[in-house]
Length: 322
Ligand code: UDP
Ligand code: MG
Image 1 (cartoon, helix red, strand yellow):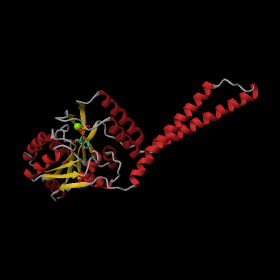
Image 2 (spheres, rainbow, N blue to C red):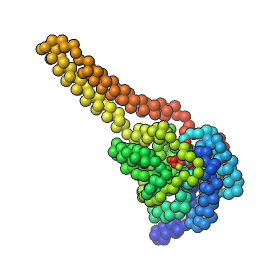
Image 3 (cartoon, rainbow, N blue to C red):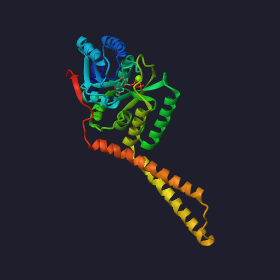
Image 4 (cartoon, rainbow, N blue to C red):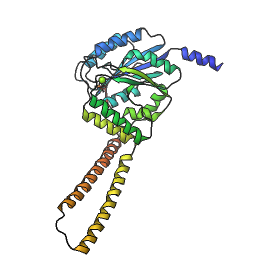
């Protein structure tokens, strides 16, 4: 009996939200609309809602989205009051999802929406988190590729949680995962860390990441560095421990060196030349102190942001059909 019900459920139409964070994407949107329209039109097993979150764009993004929403009943939107960053824009979307599933894609069509039905197949088989893993990273500089590889190796080592490699925010999540994510309301967000942290039944889906269809990337190395730090600090206090270890080690070495100097001075008298050794000690100690302070600062800053308890984002205007 159960089997029959399960089969019926599996073959029934599921509702799914495609969440698209947008920031100054007026060049990409017309192409995106075209491809979403085609996808929605020939879908039998999925009932789509397309949810745009505009992250404070200064160009025509909002008017384009509004117009598209007027023409199509499956379109929803949330306009944030200013630019909050992709992480927070995604959270705004996640909080408003009311369908069985969720897919997150970039507005620049780097994540082909045509793959959604194939991902949904895996979802039907019972997986809760179908994450798209890049087979190739076309159109990205070698520097970005290599730094991101190092970063994820490091994150994996320090966090103890399995991190999905070569994976972005492009994934299909069951409503179980969406509900879990809604509860993670931390202000300094790193979605990839959060997606890993929630667990559930995950499966990878290989795909070729396309080039941006139009416009320019909104990322720069400052933003990426901050995101990377969010990933580490949200997972682990390991850097603080490393600072403690390094501090202890250097203190021990300093004590040994102090004894050596003391004994030498007592035995052979005062030895004036010593500029080089003094400088070495001062520089090493100073360097380690500053580094440790910096690490503590990274954590303290995030504690500070979180304790202010401000809302994660503010909405200027929204159109959600429930
Ligand atoms: N984005 C956003 N807010 C921002 C920066 C980016 O909502 O502050 C959106 C952007 O419109 C795009 C997605 O996040 O849909 C990914 O951005 P982008 O393509 O610039 O990043 P990349 O693909 O180069 O990593
Ligand atoms: Mg992109």
